[in-house]
Image (cartoon, rainbow, N blue to C red; front, side, top):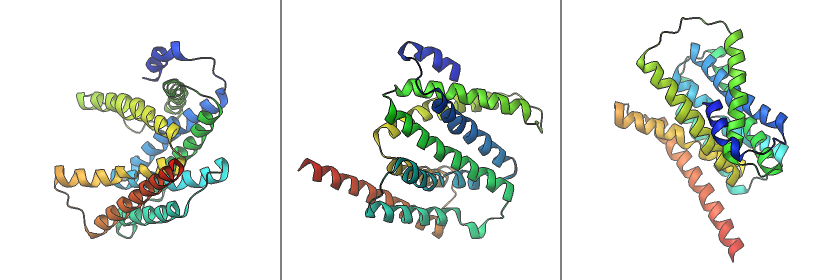
Length: 250
């Protein structure tokens, strides 16, 4: 998929001015994120792994503050605390049987994603690079990294091909990776890191609501509290941004 995107967008790509940064972006955003996430899934439950990965916003805000010197307003600080508490209520760490190795890899996946956000923002700020081109390049480097890991990481089970596996691979490659990363880079191009990162916390909320409506898995009191806290935090960020825009306009 990375090679296909690279070929499709090659006519729009100029000489790569920041090959090292783009390579690092691919190795963190694609290779590191997916490799660590899958290693975490080997010994951990999918629900907990996905929620731990979504600690990403808090790591990315720290990196953006230190490296990009992005300031955080008072309203955003309140939203960060509220979102963090909301995520804690959703994860419910007091009810989980901890698997250290799985948790460790999930957090590495989150940190890798957060690092990639900082790198992407640096690239987008330094040169006006087409987002499609940037995504194609980073996926190409990321694919090479995954291929190297596949060669050297021992496989525990033999791969059994099926229609479900083929569908999962195509969905992961086209929708979740190619389209997903393209849209994510587009959002990063338009927004500050802290706002874009915290907005991603809508995913755990939608996951819980989808499980409720489709699978009948009714959220408990803690999950409802978490959803409300995150929703209010995102609303606060939106109102803060709207207030600033209106203030500048007047």
